[in-house]
Length: 355
Image (tube, rainbow, N blue to C red; front, side):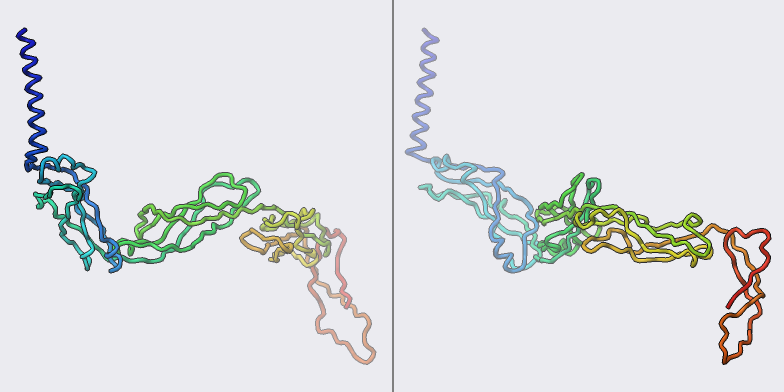
């Protein structure tokens, strides 16, 4: 019975305490304090800075602590959702460091007035700098591979320049922007929207949210051999000669129908009678209309050598034919140096020249 009596006394005490608390809050409603820590600071007035060619680049902190004083009933309605602080930078008119005071934000629908103490914690230091805008070039690179029989042309970037805006000390260090097109075994022209990376004068990179359109043109490549026809002459035939062509293949791109049944491209004819020991010539590569040469040069170097012995003779037997009747011919040269190419018979002794 004693235990039961004690339990009833405890319950009665709690009930009376609750009744008393409700009376105090709702009837007496005394003044009290409510501390708030890590109250978020929101910044306003940056539009005014922008109009002056300025921008906010640093805030010493983004939270503060405050103590709210007011009627207990009103304090009970406060929470992190309706208590805040605002930092107004609209009055800053020049670059530099500024110490500003935040303003507390409290609910406006409380019947009793609320006040904030501990305002010494409301001071915030901000850094304001000159805001500049400049254009920089966008440089692209292809990282990947193309399918066999295809070739990638230089990247097409749109736009080729972008505008960047920021604090003067930073924007002045940016050299250019880079964009990377990455894909493997590409066989078709492809376009992507890709982000750029800002690169400063020291090569340091920083990601950017700006996008550019990047097109990787892919063309089909046709390998066509280059040939030369060797015309027999001067005792030499194609069997006695060797010929090298550099480059020996031309790489063409374009509509496959323009190639037709083309299996080679001829660079023309070399008359072996004009080749003493060897001969080097450079000739243009004839590119069929509508096709594009992908070689580094559109010229071909031809080197022809003749592998036949050459023997020198002095010809002192000079005969003249069809002499004019009204004139007299007096020879000035009594002998000529004559070169014969080929295998000369052992019994061959002399050369006679007819003029």
